[in-house]
Image 1 (tube, rainbow, N blue to C red):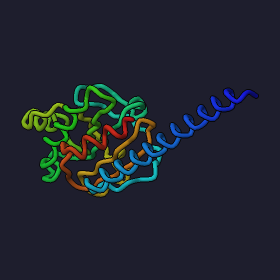
Image 2: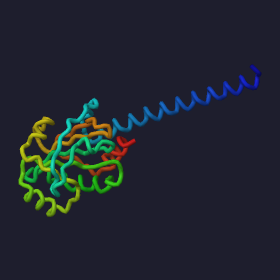
Image 3: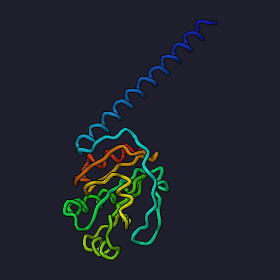
Image 4: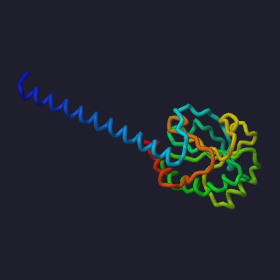
Length: 185
């Protein structure tokens, strides 16, 4: 092999090695950022458990399956209109939804065992636009082991639960928006 070919191959190998190291450092930095967001929001990080599929009807009468939302980060929130902490976070959830709805993100708010008209009236009163579904029997909440509300699960684009939060959060915070965007990557 000519000296120039050996030199070219060496430079090429060093270039690929540099790119691999840089990519690995970026991945490590990205994972660290995600961990910081989980910690800042006091979200319990879950070891990627496949989310149980279910089908519910929205306030508008549209039936949706969780699996239909693959490819998006899903903010799965269990709540009820009578719940004080749920009412405390409803505007933050709406702000989060408004900030990210045009990206690979959606809210799937599941009201547990309430009348559709009562929920609709609540949504109009609070002037919120995120999608709401009714778990009339409470079966979906039981599938997810919901023992208190609000309970929120963060589902990644592959349909895996990556985080769980019990109680209200400032969902419209910079950290929350950054976390959701980092999961879209």
